[in-house]
Every structure is written in C-alpha cells, then in structure tokens.
Amino acid sequence: MGREIGGWERLSGVILSALFVLLVYRAATQSLVHDEALTYQMYVAGPLSAIFTVYDANHHFLSTILMRASATLFGPSEFVLRLPSLAAAGWYFITILRLAARALGEGYLIFLATVLAAANPLVLDFLVAARGYSIALAFLTYGVYCIVIYLSQSGRRPGNGSRMLLVRTSIALGLSITANLTAAIPAFVIATVLLVTLGARRSPDWKYFILPLGAIVLLFFLFTPVHRASGANFYYGAPSLTASLNDLAAVSLGHNDGLGGWNRETSWKPWWRGFVVLVTLAMVVRGIVIGGPVWLNRRRVTPCDGLLLIASVTIAGSWCILIVAHHTIGLLYPLDRTGLYFLPLAGLAITGIAGGLRDRPRAIAISRVCAAFAGLIALEYALQLNRTHFYIWRYDADTKAIVSFLAGRNHAASVRVGASWPLDPALNYYRERRGLTWLEPLARQGPDGEYDYYILCEPEQDRIARYQLHVIYRGAVSGTVVAER
Image 1 (cartoon, one colour):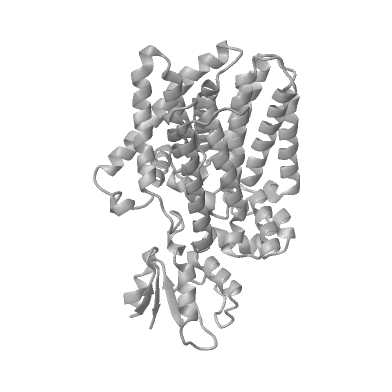
Image 2: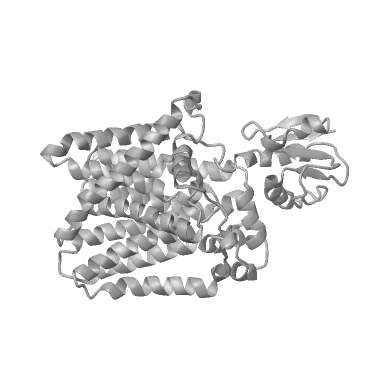
C-alpha cells in the first residue's frame, strides 16, 4: 500500500494544480515576446543546421530542439512554442511536491516549501516563456530530489536502486546544462557534493554518476555550437554582487503592483527587500552549519538534512564560483533570469532550516521564526500572481493586440512601421504568422524617420512630441503606443 497523503500535502497539490492552470492560460493568451520571437526566427523558422552551427546567448540548445519539434508537429503558435516549457513546469511542480513531502513530512512546512519554490513570480514567468530556463530548472530540481533520496539511503548496502539514483541524478544535471548554461554552476556544485560524499565513503559507485554526466557534457560540447561562444556572448548581468542580490530580491518581491495595487513602490520597500536578502543569506550560512556536520559525521542523512545541505551548499558554492569568476575573467553577476535557480533553492533552504530545527527542543523558537519568515514571503508571492505579462518583456505584453489593431484599419497596400527596436522580433513573428503582406518587415531600424505608423515603448515616447505624432492606440499593460502623423 502507498503512504497516506496528509491534508497539507493535498492542499499543496491543489495550489500547484491551480498554478499550472494559470501557466497554461498565460501560455495561450500572452503575446510572444522579444527573446521567444528571436529564437523562433533564428532556430525554429530558420535552417535546421543553425541549431548546431550558430551560437547565440539566446540559443538554449535542448529547449530550441524541443521548440522546433513542437512547431513542426503542431504549428508555430505561441502556445505550441511554449509547450516544452509547460511540460517542464508540470514536471517541476511534481518534483517540488515530492521533494517537500519526502524531506519535510506532513505539516504546514510542505505547503510553505511548495509555495516558495513554485510561486515566485519570476519563476512563474519562466515556467511559461519559450526559453530554456523552465527545462533547466526542472532537470536541476529533479537532480536535487534524487541526490536527497540517495543521501538518505546511503547508509544501506549499495544496490541497484541507489546506483540508479546516481544515474538519474547524473542525467538530470547534464541535461539541465544542455537546456540552459546558467545551470552549469549549480550543477557543478551539486556534483561536487555528491562526489565528495562518494569519495569519503569509499564508494565504488562513483562511475554510475560521473560517466553519464561526462558523456552528456562531452556530446553537448562536440555537437552544439557552444564551443564557439566567446566572452562577448555573455553580456547580460549585473556589475556587482550587491546589484545582483538587490535585483533578485526586486524581481521576486517587486515583480508587479500586486492585488489592488498593494505592492506599489513605497519608501519602505527597498528596506524590506534588503532585509529579506540579509536574512536569507544568514539562513543559508546557518543551513551549512547545521547540515555540514550531519553530512560529515553520519553515514546516513535524513531527507530533511539532505535537502538543507544541498540547497544551502548549492547557493553558497554557486555564489563563491561567481565571485571568483567575476574577479578573474570578468563574468557578470546574475541578473533576473540568469540567477533564476537561486530563488527556489532559497525557499527550500529556509523551509529546510525550519524543518531541521523543529525537533530540537532548544531550537523550536528559531524554527518558528524561520517558518514565519517563509510565510511572509509566501504571502507576498501569492499577492503578486500575474496573468498578463512577463516582468522582463513587459514592453511586448500588448504586441499581439497592436498587430490586430493595425490589421483592422484601412491602410495602404504597403505600410512601413518605425518601432522601438526591442519590439521588432515579435512584430515580425505576427506579420509572418498572420500573413500580413502589406506590413513591411522590420529590421531594427528604430523609430526615427518617415513612417506610416510609429510603435513606441515608453522610453522612446518622446518622439510623440518631437515628430508631432497623434497617439491612436495605447497598450493597457505595456504602455506601448501606436502613433501616426
């Protein structure tokens, strides 16, 4: 018989199901945006050979292949291009629930861990977007799940079950890297923890982990254009550690105005975000202090100890690598999506501390403080649920509606549009998809010059007065306008 599922676990399952429905709705209704459309133009609508020969930071290899396969089978609609990300999101939700239930047992901590790992508004954005982040996060989290289970069973006699866990962990970490290169750093840290564990216990099973991982990474390097990447390709990031941490807090706690506008920027918001960053970092250090000795001194680690150890060490180890890389080769620090993996790991670390301390009589108060802190963040996530736009590409939120508006107007047989350059890829996508032959292709020429229509993002709307334009449409979400002379 299977184990009994408790009320908090059921509630967590309901919440994840509701979030998945929200993701499906967003995938079907939101306009395609700049990066999605650029990938479509370069690798989905373009020649198949480009996937294996042309490198761009926008090229998330495994995701691109799945997007092309999905579009070939069902046609390149917005929803179809996002199907691989949605499938990964469903798997990610299932993994999070299984991991929380296994590590934290029955109780409200399952619910808090689920919400913190799954409901972060930026994470939800990238579980929808046709990019590689959703797939990478799903594989990385599954690797964490497998290693937590392995560590909790490692005191037993080695067998096929534990060896298969090593193989599954290895494959998951390897494929996370092929889906998005940002996963390489946390995958490396997790792999190091596992190899140190195997070495300390003189386990002969190391080959079941290292060989599949090595094979995937080698094939990825040989048969994809990643070996053509240069430093110039990694241009997106924050110039300082402080800027990176503040950004990750802002995109999580200041993603949008929130229900009823409660989350609009006020004087105390930056202080609150700074407090969250400091407390979270302190909890990560505390997690290493708690989990490290347990890991080093026992042959068998509880699932909660394993979760706390892996989450905390992965966060701390990744930051250490990033700091060294920044000061040695000039690598920029993570900015929003490039630090996406930190967000669910931080939630798991916080709830892992609460779970690890709740059975220690002298630490019950600390456990409750950690749980209360997690509850505040979970509440803020819940109040920021969003169905209209991606934080990073808000300017494209109304692009589909803008194209429909233009298509419904009487105009000449040939129409030239001057648009803010970030809008060009999505506008070209809808031009092609809807067969709007009267609309001339956009080539990033910008909005300066003589055009039939001007489509302007908010930063470039000074052209309205400069060219004496008349606004005929304004996007309700993005604020992007259509204007004419």
